Length: 279
Image (cartoon, rainbow, N blue to C red; front, side, top):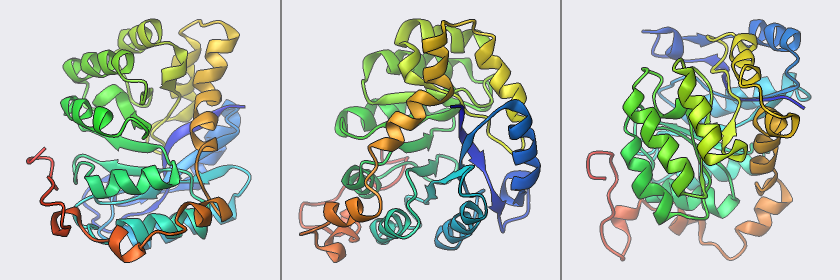
C-alpha cells in the first residue's frame, strides 16, 4: 500500500498565498489515483481558526473515507489553553491519527507535546529551517514520534537537511518525509545513514504533483522491502499506535481535562517556554 503522508486540503482564510487560500482535494485525488497512491494523510492549509479548519478536514475525509486520513492542525501558541480539547475532539469524534504544526506560525510547546503523547499521535512538525529545535524536542519527549517534513526545509536549506539527517541517526523518535526535497542526495544520505524505517513518502499536495514526488522515492533504487517501508509501511506503523475512538476515551480516564487544557505557563510547576524564541 502506498500512503502519501503529507497533503493539504480545504480552504484557508488569509488569502495572501496559495497555501493559505485554497487546497482543492479533487485534482490531487485524480493525480494520486493515476500515480497508484492508495491513501493520503490530509490536514488544513494555514488558517486563522484551526478548530474550524479541522472540522472542514473532517468533512473532506467523510467524503472520501477510503482514500483519506485526517490530521489535526494546531497553532501552538494561539491555541494555548485549548490544544488538549481540540485534539481530544479530533481523535474521538473524527478518528484523526496525527497532528500538524508549522514553524512559520509557532513551534511545539509542552502543552502540545503532552497532548500528542497522551493519544500516542505522531507530530508532524515543520521546523521551517530551524532544525536545531528538534535537538530540544526529541530528548524531552522520547515517547513522542516527531516527523520533520521536507528534511527540515522547504526552502532548499542544505544546512537544515544535513542537521535533520544527523538527527534521524541520533534520535529513535525522529523521522522525516520526502515532500518538496529538491536536493536529492540528502534523501539518499538519510536512507543510507538512518535506514529506510526513518523516511516517509510525502508529496505536499495539492500544490506539488504526487506522481512526481513519488518518482523520487522510486529513483532511490532501493530493495523492495525498504521501498515499501518508505512508501507506506512507516506511515501505517506510526499511525497504528494512535489512540482513537474508544481507545482515546480510555487514554484520558482519570485525566482532569480542565487541567490538561491549562497553558503550562499558568501551572504550579512554574513557567515553561511557550514560543520558538524562548526555546
